[in-house]
Structures are given as C-alpha cells and as structure tokens.
Image (cartoon, rainbow, N blue to C red; front, side, top):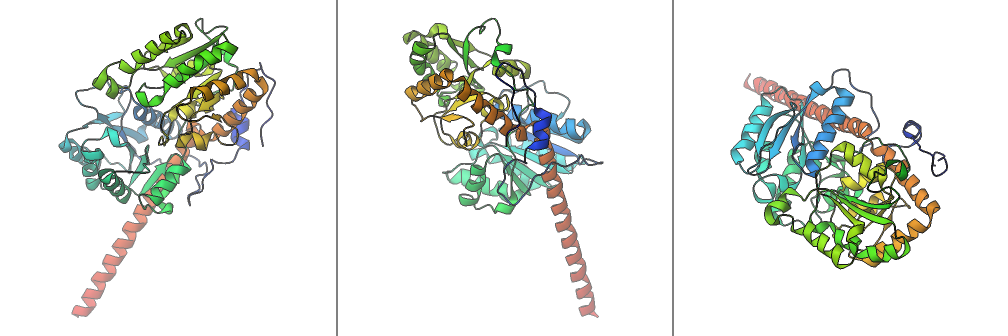
Length: 443
C-alpha cells in the first residue's frame, strides 16, 4: 500500500514515513533480516575488496558499505584490506590498513597473517572474479585458507554457466565462508542450483543506496540541461553497456520531443582503458555525429563524486540502463536511480527484471533501439504514467537505503560469529568427552 503522494511539482521527502510503513526487503531464503538495534559492543569487522579512490563499482560499494556500518555502529569497528590492480597505487583513507597486490600470491598469505594478528572478529569479503589474481580469481583462496575468524562473503556476480575454474573457485569460497550474501533472489537461486550451496547458508540483502528525497527533475537541472528533457545513463563505460542503442533511438525520440538531451556520465572503465583506450566513447561520439544527434548527446567524461552523481540523477527525467547481456547479477546504478525515484527504461538483465517488476520500470528487448524510442516517447507523452512509475520505484527502494542495509549486514555478521562460537564450543565439549572416555578406558 502506497503512502499518499502530493501532486507533480511539489518536492517530496517521505523517507521517515516509508521506513515506518514498509515491510522488510522481500526475502525468500531461510534468513529474515529484520532491522536490529546497534549492539552495545559492536564486533570488529575487516572488509576485503576494492576501495575508493580506485575507480570501479566494487570500490564504490565497499566504501559505501564501510561508511554505512561506521555511521550505525562506529568507525572504530571497521577497517579495509584494499586490493590494488596491476601497476596502480592509491591514496587511501586511514580506514585502509593493508594493501593487497592483485597478482602477487604471497600478498594474500600476508594479508591473512595481518588479519589473524589484528584482533578481528569477522572478515567480510567482497567477491568479484575480476578483482583477484590467479585463474578466475583463485588467489583469494590462499587468503581464505589461512583465516582463523568467521567469513561472510558478498557475491557481486553469480554465474549461470561458469567454466570449470570459476565453478571450483566459487565452491571453495562457499565452503570457506560461514555465510554468503547475494543482492537478488535470482543470484540466490543460481547459488543453489548451479553451485549446490544450501539455502540456509544464503542471505539476501539488497544493494545499498543513499537516502535521497523524491523531487522533481526541474529543481536540479543545471545550466546545460535547463529546459531540456534529460535521458541519463551513468557508470563506467564499457562496450557491454549498450549505450549505442540509446543513441540510435534518439532520432525517433527527437521527432516527437525535440528538447531531449541524452547524458552519458562516467569515465571509461580502467580495465577497458588499459586495453583499448577511449575507443568505445569515440565510437559513441562518431555514431551520434553520423545520426545527426551530436548536439543532443552530452558526455561527462569523468569519475563523478557522490555529490555530483546525486545532482545528475536528480536532474534526469528518465534513467536508462540498456545493457546488452542478460547475465548482469547486480547493477548499483539501477538501484541508485530507483532510490531517486526516476522513471526507468532497461533491458531485461537479471537484476533489472527483479527490481523493475510490478510497474517499477519499463523493460525493453536487448539491442532494440526502436523499443527504447517507443517506450521513451510513451513515458514523455504521459506525465501521469511516468509519475506513477516513479512513485512505485521510490517506495520500493526505501527498503534499500544504506542504514537498513548496514543493519542487515550486522545481523548476518552476528549470526555468523555466534554460529562459529557454538561450533567451537561443541568441538571443545566433544574433545573433553573423548579425553574423559580415554582416561576411563585406560583405568
């Protein structure tokens, strides 16, 4: 049931009302992640993953998760082991206590030794195949094999058709993790069906988002987009994102709505830039020129700050994620756009299909510029339909704000630690009983 929404044109901030009226994030696993109060003595947690200022989605996620946990439970209880990519060093904040070199197997053992000697209660690993060294990221197994504390692993990618190495790595990670966190029901099901992970070991926690107000785009349009209708895509550029399909849709959109501008915000992904430079962006610019829409496409060629990102997303009338492939388990940018109450057009990759169900967004076929154009025109023609979509997305996303996500993570951490302690006590009791039995037999 929706909280009443004021008419279009009135800025709205219903964050507190939504928090009190909405149920917890839908979850069909055996774990129920209810909001919990901060413990009086928070456990000490070390996160392993990329961290800003490294430019990638995992770095942004790890940074945001640390910020959220620190805000809820205190900064003293969380620090980071950061993973550096080849030939790169970063000026990390103080919370980064150890830097792990992606391709150096010995640094993984060194990181484990550092953690074991650091009075850490629990490790939270951020897993993505591409950020760790070795075949399919197998170097991270060396670290996990030597850790003495409980491990909770967040899985950012769960593959439907892994190769042999990917299968082995994931199964080993699952075995050595006390709990596994996924961000969608689809990923949970794949873990069970493909990797044979028991459902009771899996927790579903959504991708976190900032707690943004529900506001009209016109309030945030800058000098460039003033009086323009803004279609927006943001995130690191790579050829699998499908931005060319939106550019190809522009002539048709402009024939109906001539004041549209398509903003592509974000730098080229560092891995892509190392391989091929800025070729993909140049191809997009050439395509816009060929189609005669270069004046209606704007590139913000930089890794934007959180403040700039918030302003950009707020200024959008429609957000577009035209990704080219189905196997996209998580999209942080999609979650962010929902949290800002944007009307959304997306291809039906896994995360989008789940998040945008029940009218929270519009799905179009892969590689189909005509469908993007038709959907954009339909939404721009119908303010009521667009507003209703925005409202449904925004209210659904209230259960994804970072403070709720941090509390859910803490609940999983406490459960993992309690389970490990119970197992240890059980093993100790069994050893004592066996010792007593041996003594009686010897008598």
